Image 1 (cartoon, rainbow, N blue to C red):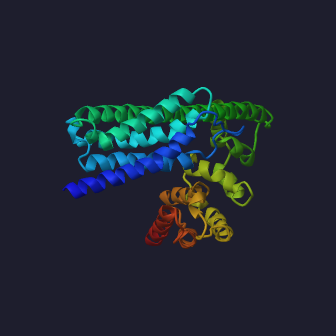
Image 2: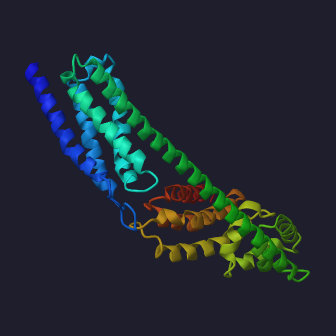
Image 3: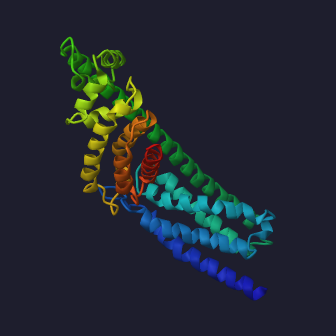
Length: 336
């Protein structure tokens, strides 16, 4: 037991000396940082802080602090805070505003650690151990206070980022509303579907509502959509077609399938499974949704969905779309 205690004392003191001397040099008078500040200083101070915390922990584990009469877990719980404080304190000591606080924290921590490890040399050790533990706990409380301050600052920064993003989105939507209202006013009295389809998801609610009303009042909306699906406006129409097309769509299965088959061939060269195909999810989901709408109305999209099921199969992030395409293909086969 005596040999183990002696070995613990030697190791704890060795760690304390090897870390303490450099820390004292770091807080020495006259030391200043360059104009760029203490960039990367934590890479020096952090290992030293960990060594001091290790020395204290070793002393506590070896029973060197038991004379204080406190439970060991009290100082064990203080070790992370002590490490944080001693990482930051030498950096503070290099500045003008925080020099006194940084120097004081380092000195109090080193004296406290020394008393925890070597308190037995002072009388019965009780007072020294108590004072050492109190000093370590005080510095550790400062370290935990820094962590709390950083956490609060991180939350405040995150809140500012969110607020800025919300404000940016609101500005964007406001600008788009003004632009879309102006463009809507330029349409002829009886616009065609390809002209209307641009406004089905307008940010301006009154434009969006009026646009959808005009589509419903077209002489033959399905005929107009059949023609549109053969043009470059087809992809722009998919989301509205899937969500809010005002008529049964089974008769549009053939032109939609033709468009979807062509799209499957085009996307085959885009979706690289070695990349991040899941990033295209939003672009691809509307194709499956449009086919789903037609299938729900009784249209046969078997060939198109078989091609899309094969296209999406094995693509990370697109498993749900692949499964739905395969289901639609099988369902169409059953109905047929």
